[in-house]
Figure (tube, rainbow, N blue to C red):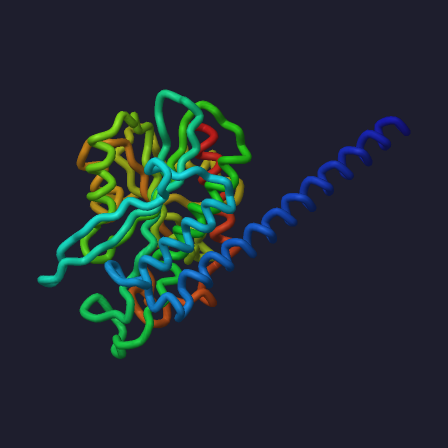
Length: 296
């Protein structure tokens, strides 16, 4: 009996220690998410409008973070894929940013999130006052932040089964131009893509319903399957015909899955700010995505 009690005490201690470590890790991850989202949605980046110098500054920030995480550049010695696009009779310049973990594997997983937003609004704004900075904290600084966390966690995972690309697309809001440019890059490369996981507007998880929207062109992926990867009782709602960067790649026959917490009343408004992000909910989604990546 005494031995049983000792074993039980040891087990409780181990469980308590594990829960403490997990809680501490979640706090650290929340701080990182806040830093990424706050920096990208700050007034100094003026809404990260596609084709602007502010979008380029956001891309440079992403590159600095990838370097700090010791993620190598994808495009030779560069993290940036520069391109031009036309919009409203203007010839504009933008760039995708991408880091790469090369495990010499046969196929590659891509984690995707666009990093641009709509600047001071213009015709894309849904605010009555559209000449102020639209921060885009949820759209899509939240997706960039989760992508960065996934890059950090994947590098530490030492899973050699796949290579990994962490892709941040520009000029999304004006017509998915970054995704189209990267699709062209893939067509001219030797990459064999296992799956593209797109995270866009991932920071507004409803605390009561915990509903996460997803769309996929992969048969066999269901709400029930995704629930197996969630340790926080997320509710998965499958939808169709959701336009985003993933649709560009799905149109090429590439396996894709898109995740979002959905449209909200601050969408494309000056009120889409960091203070409205559900950081604990975003951590729950990040944990699920890591489990999904581990089980591909």
